[in-house]
Each structure stands twice: as structure tokens, then as C-alpha cells.
Length: 138
Image (cartoon, rainbow, N blue to C red; front, side):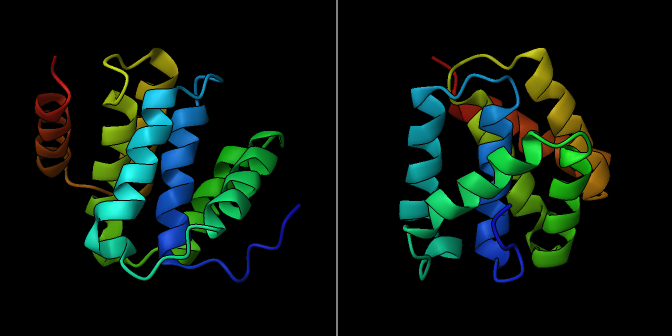
């Protein structure tokens, strides 16, 4: 298991995006492109070292192999992600889920868990979901 003590808020955001992509056990190219695009273009990742993505991805994959891996992932998120970035995290998760044009049951369940774990207001979460849906319509 990789060391998670030196992860930061940006790593937590990347971990959440990777977790959403991996939740249905099928990481799609569109989802990877969405994650890379977010890291390359969003202000929250302005000083992020892209090389950390591989380490963060390995942490997520290792956690998902454990029986209580999802709980451990959320523990990592709570530890490293400041509350001011909770809505940002959910928006990024929704964008990754919607990136391939369809959201499966596994992704829906994980998004529900994320809403719960981050204690997001239902109305705010619905607005974020609606925005992701609008951005990814074909």
C-alpha cells in the first residue's frame, strides 16, 4: 500500500475522479481525458505535479482491492480535502461520470456516497449534477 500521508488536497481531488472512473471496473478513455483535462486546465490544479497522478491512481486501485476500500478512500478524502473544495470535488466527480455519455449504476451509487460523505446540500448537488449533464450532452 503506497504511503498516503504526503497526499494533498489536489491528490484527493484526483483520487476521487479516478475512483469514479474505476467504480464500474471499466476506466474509459473519455473519463481519462476528462481527468487529464481537469488537471491541465482548472485553477485548483495550477501548481499540481502531473507525475503525482500515477501514485494517486495506485493508491485508489490498492484501496479498491481491500474489503473496506471505499471507507478508506473517504477517510483519505476527509483527511486531505478542505471543506471549501467539497463542491469542487463533487463537480469533478460528476464530470468524470458523465464524460462517456452514460452513467451506470456503480457510478450513480458512488456519486450518492460522495454526496453523503461530503455532506453536500441536496439542492447544491442537484445543480452540480445538472451542470455536468448539460456540459456532456451530445
